[in-house]
Image (tube, rainbow, N blue to C red):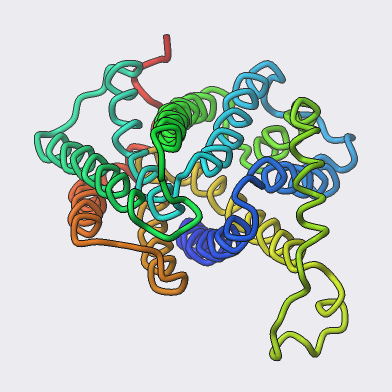
Length: 335
């Protein structure tokens, strides 16, 4: 029941989070660092009060273990959001990140010396081809679209390649972090709330390196117009606040629900099972993004999407085995 509730909260919280993220990106495509900083700050403050009890609670996991996770988590979060500044449309962003199952399997083979069935190798092949197809389709679409992500010159194309490279790097770094987290739990026990606090609190000083960029986009947010909604106009504050701050508040609150649910799942399932659930959530977010925001999506996009999420479902037929596997310690150790 605990894992079921956490899974439902992943869908509700994370899908709502993506909705607010796309509203923010459409207002200011370069606001990724501001969004990440706000998320980390709110989750860290909440964890300091409720989990660490204002710093009086003793940690259950050695501090050095958290330091390694924190560095990776900070890099993954900033890189994923920063990629949106390089002509990367949000639907492609979501499809690309759905390849986390592929990255998780590759690193599981290389680091944990795991072996999988032929069906699982087939599913990963489908995901890989699907991502390639969607990437190629997006490159063609951007060359003649009217969106803010339009590619009109060779320079724009180069920056788009930089964005794809950033997504690829973050994809494998995230998978590595998931494996590290799984091994850490096997050694020291499962303490998701404590891990959630440290992975958001310790990186906060790192945002000083991004101070110039964050302050710039705070100014952009301050200059945005108030919400134009007859439904929400009954709340006086919404008629005064710039709408980007309202979107950011919604993004931060839903991110807190989403990330808490994901961390609970990591204590109930293996990293691959968690990856499967999160990937299915991304598919729901993708469909909503295409429908609500009218994002361009060609037949080639749909073909690639079917391969990506179809491959994920093929892999998912082994989910009961993954759930049972999570109850025992991994046989292999990380080098």
